[in-house]
Length: 93
Image (tube, rainbow, N blue to C red):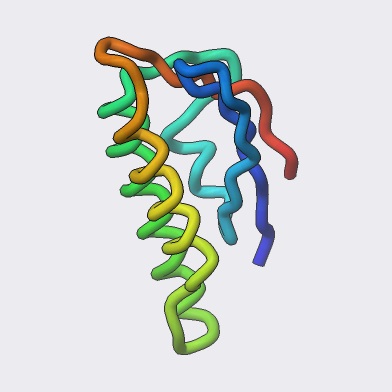
């Protein structure tokens, strides 16, 4: 199963390399685009849950790495300034 990393810049200036066990993230986020924090979290949640389910379909268990990444995104989002935007910088396929 192809995996990827998507690199983001949080509104507070912190950069993060986020993991996905599937390329499905490409269907929800685009490099060079910025998203309201809440929108970024929702798109990431949808993509990472789909990715985890794809792992379950193939291997019989959910992807804990995808779910851990989602938890890190949700946690990071809570500390961002109001009205902030997350920029998706690059994908590593």
